[in-house]
Amino acid sequence: LNGATDIALSYYETVIDANQQTNPIPNPSTYQNIDPLNQVIYVLAVNTTTGCSSIGEIQLIVHESPIMPALDDLVLCDTNYDGHVYFDLSVQNPIILAANTISPLQIRYYTTALDAINGTGAIVNIANYYNVTNPQTIWVVVKDPATGCSETTTFDLHVNIPVDVRGQNNKLTLCDEGLPNDQSTTFDLTVMN
Image (spheres, one colour):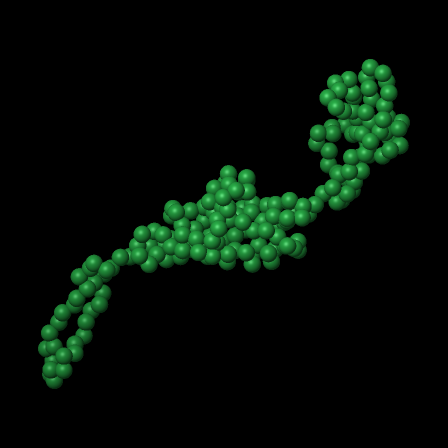
């Protein structure tokens, strides 16, 4: 339209309707395609000053989006009591790939929703990711590189911190009071609870 303001546009599902100017699409801003995957819409452009018109085609193409299954949170136990461990995020990849028939797919992991939306700052070493907070949300995006279609979901990383018994008094002392004096006796281990 080259910036022209004196052009009236109307849209039609058939070229016959466009030529006859009948049955225009009532709300072109929310049009739901009626032919799966590929459909042609006809646009009638009328110059409101001259009355001249032309008909053009708009091809609507619908690509299959990847499927993003629900992903379980990843949970590990802390071994040094600091709330941080190394997670293998790639364990989610087979679950994502198994839900899809599209191949190949790109799978990327992010630490923020904004990075996931923008496709920037993906986690580089997904097989050995050291969590920053506990719990921590991870965003995962699966994308069809051929079409650009993508889906996003989240899962959380949880670090379970075990009871710290390292600094406890871990000694139970009893005397061997029975004969023979074989340095063996019965202990009640529950007194350490």
